[in-house]
Length: 416
Image (tube, rainbow, N blue to C red; front, side, top):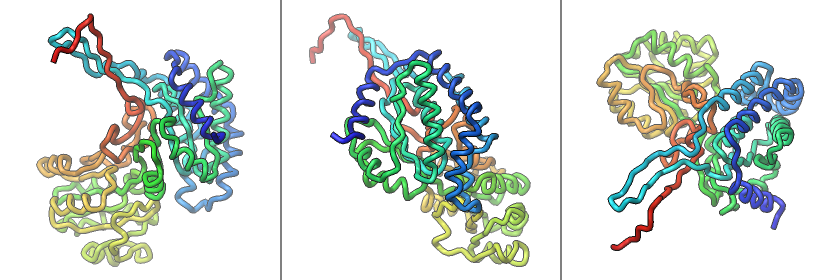
């Protein structure tokens, strides 16, 4: 048995009997929160070691960055999660059968949760805090570009656990080597679920190679449709916020769909993007309306490769559509099932869009930037699930539980 396999085995055994009362859990989260602030200089120093290997102009730089403001925000997130109700031992369903059996469907932890992620060291704290609150153990595999940042955060977590007399083996950071991920993928019966959080490449790699159950999260190919009835002022703010609030996140806008009868408003609709140097890839119809208005050095003719792509950058494509049906058809062809939005004042059009578009989160007259566990008042998130089995959308405490049936009787036997 390899060393990693032994660690996975020990964690599985630990998970079978792991239980902390809610006060103890909240004490741990509060202590880690304080330690983050007290060790902010050390965290920033370690984070700078990772940042030194990345071009500051790369949009991924922002994902990796930990500064004082963000550390305080992370510390506050831990307190917020502590203030949430426990997701465990909730009775989801209860009934008494004609034969007198009492059935209860009750929430339980998943067990050992593994998360593979890229770039963002805040995921380390999000995963641990949500797993702790939901009674799960966690195995983390961060990208090598964030190694020093992830390690210092895990060290702080382990120190807190040790000081509070809790087994620090409830969290484990996998080494950078690719072979470590391969061992994790084959740890059937030891790890209950693997959750990749990152781009399409990472998710595809995990899906193809992992033998344990997988919940897909992360990749967002995001559209916003500006309908014939759309309000220009609302639309301008929604598109700007959806595209430029943070371009490196999975809920950022990638493709703007615009009704052909509103092309005359297109430049005004996206004018704020020009001030932020957003490169536009426009189809021929929209390109004609933007020529001599949108900065020429930022304006390009779109081709097929500019649709169905997660830019994660100051780039956006535009497609002209003839109708709501055309917009929905385009979305269904290219979407990753993450987040989609419509800007429309016609309530019938809005409702049809909300019902027909198949994505984890579908918006009307607000930007897709709200797809976030914190914004949904879930405390934090493991990721945004883009599949339909078990969890969909922001995955937080409730989504980290399974359930079991408890059946109470008084000597009944089955006779048929």
